[in-house]
Image (cartoon, rainbow, N blue to C red; front, side, top):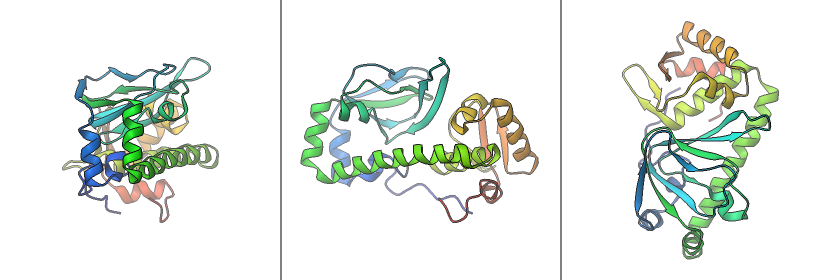
Length: 235
């Protein structure tokens, strides 16, 4: 299996800007002034009563939520081109998760009246937003299925394949997942214990599928990892 090259739009596949036409993309990007935050800074706080959305122009952010026992769970990764905070803008409910920068992030704040006017004037953008939300719900549903239907090793392999495809950066060694990811965070994404993730990563290193560094994972044998993920004709 060969990993695909970067899309010609310049935006990662599946992000909101990737889904828009060039004119709509230009209009949205020019709607509000750009701001910058540093790693660890928070874009959105879980529980906040806010109605704006955040458009990420570049950088990488993590989406986390506190569980009922007070633990922090990593839910997803967002990258340049993504829109975040759309649920509260659409349903008037408090923020369901926290979004924090993993790298420097350049972003803009799109207030709800601006977003609504944009969607009214750009029907295709409204369809694209619906598609983005549907894909995120599908991913969440798929995660719940994989949590019960597959072994921890398969779940870890699937998360690594998906992240490499979506966020990988080509290096001489292979495709490096382009953001810091701790074993604890990977365990949270895979729905398994950190000690189990450590064992699985050790197995993948031993069979030559990946190499790991400080908070980095590089996929060097994608076909082997795909077999471990039991992905047959998927992705």
